[in-house]
Image (tube, rainbow, N blue to C red):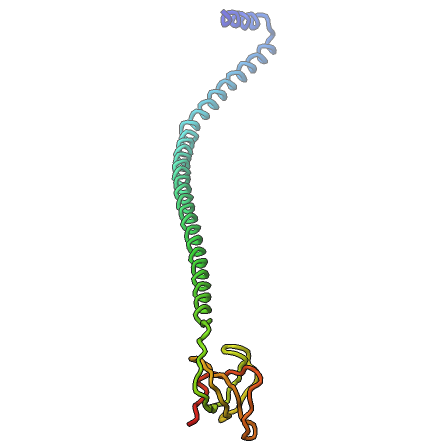
Length: 202
């Protein structure tokens, strides 16, 4: 119906219009036709581009996106695997550290026990004092004189110094007297010397 009215309008315009107006209308109609043609060409060009270029590019990007997603999934799985490995290694390392600390502690305790035992062994029980026949002894070498067996050093006697005793233990000899200018003098204090440093005079 609209097309019919439009046609009537155009015909009536042609009938009543002047020649100049008819020329203008013809030019307008030509412009409209040209615009329609250009519009169709643009539409066709857009369709061709979409089909021939954009669509292919879109498919290409879809494929790349799919591959990237697959890579990301693989990377996530690898990261989870590495995280588990690292956690396992850290746990194992902590256990090793604890074992090493325990071993160090055990070794220290063992060393302490060893030292204590050695001290107990070196600390001998008091030896039994024995009375012997009074005899003369002389020093085999320069030696220290002690205030008691395993006691404090008092002074030093030179080799061949002579003394007398009638008391000893297994490892020590008590000096009961000694000679000064060939005269025997009684010891006024406790004086002891190691037995392996003296000889009994005949």
